[in-house]
Picture 1 (cartoon, helix red, strand yellow):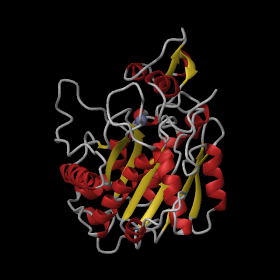
Picture 2: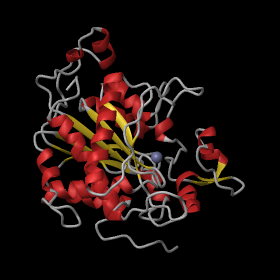
Picture 3: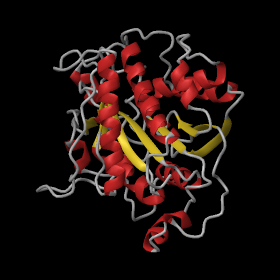
Picture 4: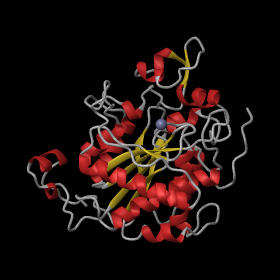
Length: 347
Ligand SMILES: [Zn+2]
């Protein structure tokens, strides 16, 4: 199969991330878990850590005591950002951005040779935890390095796969059966090898090992912000609000959405502006998903960033690989400013 060529800085395969992990010199390196398909989930971390810090109570109990510092003391903790790519295997935009962020942190330049001085400066004295591919099983099934430049059909085929009769599963119908494994012909990149969509795992039952590892990571690191990097077809850059998250945390997502909108505008890049809160009170309530679960695990501001994917036969902005990566860096910069200024009430 032939796919549009990607620039040399755009690396998103399991093999590229394994090589990045093996060759990283400055990172603290961890294999979070091994997937049902036998693949390692790699994590690279930078900066001082809260891991191992004694806590008096879990997050729920700390809130119950009306004293969040029983979970993590804002006076002493290191502000911590967790960045997670490819929870859905075909959404490679976040992985490309994280590949470039790790390269920047390791070498002082990203893989395209840019120094990104403001971003690098904002990473100082912050704990930065990077999972380039959370779902390597799903990523392994997806042959293109990017969805950019492909068509709607390709996005759905590689993303949600096909039912047993060969028809496209599509979105959101793909969520009507979970786990989906026994109902499909081609299992799309959304799922691990057991057919689990990590975003919609059964959070009150034994979890997929990838989901558990991500939540344990957020807890262990006492994350302040967790960004789940997804693709959104031809949407503008979209910082999505999270259902069932506390109002102070939702307010930070709104603030970040405004900041990214303004920052992007200054560079000619389009972000969606801030969203209203109240996702849980519509005729069909919002889903309690992995972003919600990460918030309830450790109190972090936890949200999905949906990137433009440049689908050529859908309406919407048609961005280049460079623009897509730059928009991720804007999201990282604006989030790091919030962390550096300790604006979130629990930091
Ligand atoms: Zn997704």
